[in-house]
Each structure stands twice: as C-alpha cells, then as structure tokens.
Amino acid sequence: MKDYQPNEVLGNSYEALDIIRMGCSCYIIFSPPDSRFHVLGEDTNVKTALIRIRKAYFQIAARQIAPVRKYILDFGNAQDEIHSHVTLEDYQRIKRIDSVASTIPGHTGKSPRSQGKVVSRSTKQQLVETSMYDVKIAGKTIMLMISKLHYYRGHLRLRIRLGTFLATHYKISSNEDYPLDDFNEMIKQSQFAGEVTPE
Image 1 (tube, rainbow, N blue to C red):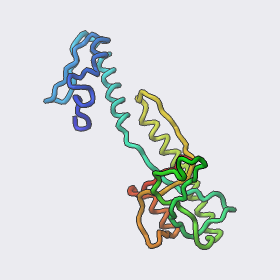
Image 2 (image 1 turned 90 degrees about the vertical axis):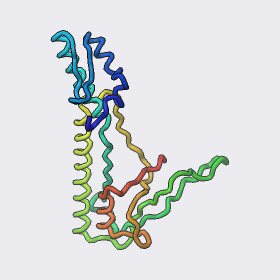
Image 3 (image 1 turned 180 degrees about the horizontal axis):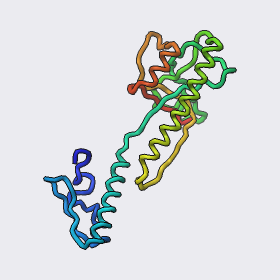
Image 4 (image 1 turned 135 degrees about the vertical axis):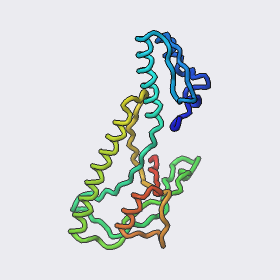
C-alpha cells in the first residue's frame, strides 16, 4: 500500500482480480489493516491464485517504471574536426512547398552547433574515447530497463527518430555559448532536456 493503493489500481471492488477468482474458484479479499490479500479456497487453487496475484503485482510494478533519459555527445572519430565551444542557436524550421503553411510550428528549442577553434589532437582522441564509452553506457542502460520488464505484458517498441536535436531545458549562459567541457557536463544534469524534430 506504500507504493500503490489497491483500489486505485485494481478497482473499488478489486474487480481486476475477478478472472483469478473465477479461474481458481477462490475468494480473494483485501484486508487494509495488514495490507494484504487473503485467498480462500482449496489448497491447490489457493497456491495457483497466489502465484497469479504475484504476477499481477509484478506487471503493475513494471508499468510504473519511470522512463530514463540520457543525452550523449558523439564526437565521431579522431579524423573529424572537434571545436572548443558549443553554441545554442534558434532552430531554422523547414519550409514547406505547399501553400497551406510555410513553416512547421511547435519547436521552441535551440539547436547546438560547434564553434571556436579546433581542439588539439590529444584532446580530440580523449573526447572520441569518452563518446565511445557513453555509447556503451547507453547500451547498458537499455539492457537494465529491459531486465526490469521481465513480467511486463504488452508491446515494447524501440524507436529511433532522425532529425535535429533541440535543447528545451538548459542552463542559460551569456550569448548561449558554452565551452565543450561545460556543455558535456550540462547535458548530464537531470534538469537538462531536449527533443528531436520529426523530420
């Protein structure tokens, strides 16, 4: 009951458990004082009902898992140019060809662009290694989330959206210009958020 109010999740009369009641020929009663369900019936039916109630709880818990957001910088490879600063610029919306609308509304974020002098070869190599490590961490994060969905019943979708990244919640700085290290640190903060345009 500390995590979930049974009547809010299962219905006022716990009618979501009716299929277990009928399938196992049992009475299932919730007792608020001791915060548990009591299952009454024949021994074998009660054991089956308890297993099914346990699975139902795991499904409810799996559906309540909070989403995880992770932002990483991709520095390509050691041959690519990497600049010392990142500037957040107004997003140049795509113009449509038709006469109905000239722009796509709804995007208010800022698009990051690299600026400044090119970093040294040693710094470039270090940044590339950091981005490769971040990719591995992202993969581990996905696998960790999948392991939490062991009892989840439903459809899972892995979607990749290709478009322009827009920062929507970020730390304001003068001229919205950030040294590369500061920007890399900022995207790791919980307050930072962004979206990808549906281009």
